[in-house]
Amino acid sequence: MAALFFLGFSSGLPLFLTSKTLQAWMTVENVNLGAIGLFSLVGLPYSLKFIWSPLLDRFIPPFLGRRRGWLVLTQGALLVAIAAMALQKPSQALELLAINALLIAFFSATQDIAADAYRTDVLEKPEMGAGAAIFVLGYRVALLITGGLALILADKIPWPAVYLLMALLMAVGLVSAILAPEPIEREARPDSLSEAVSLPFIEFFQRNGQLHGLLILLFIILYKLGDALVNNMSTPFLLEKTGLNFSPAEVGAIQGGLGLLASIVGILAGGAILSKIGINRSLWVFGGLQAVSNLAYLILAQVGKNYQLLVLTINIENFCAGLGNAAFVAFLMSLCNQRFSATQYALLSSLMAVSRDILVAPAGRLAEVTGWPLFFLISIAAALPGLVLLPVFAPWNPRSIPDMSIPGLDEQDDEPY
Image (cartoon, rainbow, N blue to C red; front, side, top):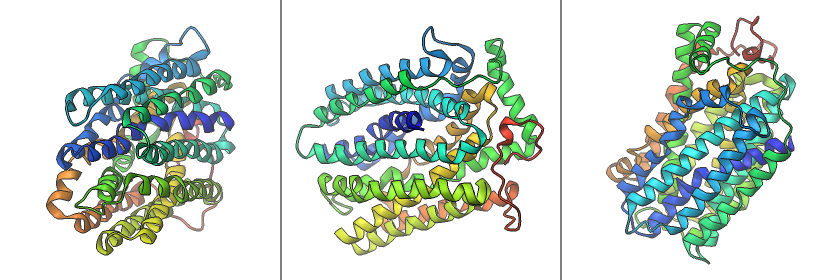
């Protein structure tokens, strides 16, 4: 569990450095909203990582084993790529900034492939809920450091120095990967690269059925769409002059203080609740709370600059995100076969990234056209299709006994949940 916490931290560290924190830097440098919104496209590797994930299932680095070896390689590359951001100037060379951010996203997506496969392989069935919660907890702590502490530091020191300090934090991942236990391989790895590419997809649809398999993939894309719209533009909304015009230090202090506490409570509560009611009902309950949490931003946009309401809004967002992420990670793990866990989890999490990085790309332009209150109302509506789709393949049966078995690792089970 300690290894999962620190690997979760390492996995979460690069994300905001190419999204929210980078948006804050670009906003301060007076880059226009349209360009800031389009910068979500540098996150494309998160959506496409399933393309090269079979390499991590098939090949084993010459040190530390199949999972930890890949972790160390990608973490070293990330340390260098994040440090290189200190050389960038957003107001003068957006193209170079985009290329550097794209490299970070690529190495980060590859680290996620290895980390997700490690977590899926190392956890026993009864540990799934707790392991998912601990990993997401580390991930959220990293997000709050790069999205909270980084903004506070940016008021004291130049942005390039902030990125250098964030790069040094990747050492946490390097040490953790070296000291973590290597998962016991219960299944033989694919015999060839062609098997590593084809068998994960064949096995997934054979186990779930073609129609239900497609519905699962569509659900993964849509489940967090509303949350992704808000996350993509919340930082410009809070900082930009046409928004609320808070200072980076104000936003960072609240996110890094009470926001961190709310996130920790949400993640731990999510893991505890999931272990009691099961994955199905957790997706229902936490998905509904994610949609409702966007109302806080709508109210804040209507009221205007208000410190107390800002505190409440960020706390609600972090708490509900913690709940939802704990359930969603456990759900994705439950769909994977250990023999192909890198490729299958990469495919599933890539589809989740489609909503976060691609479908939200026009969010900046949408906010310019509609104004902030209507934008947040649209984000609430965008959260509904995933919930509408959920009953198609995961009906809520309150009378049933919660089932925490993971059929993805047990082929004799018929139901994939």
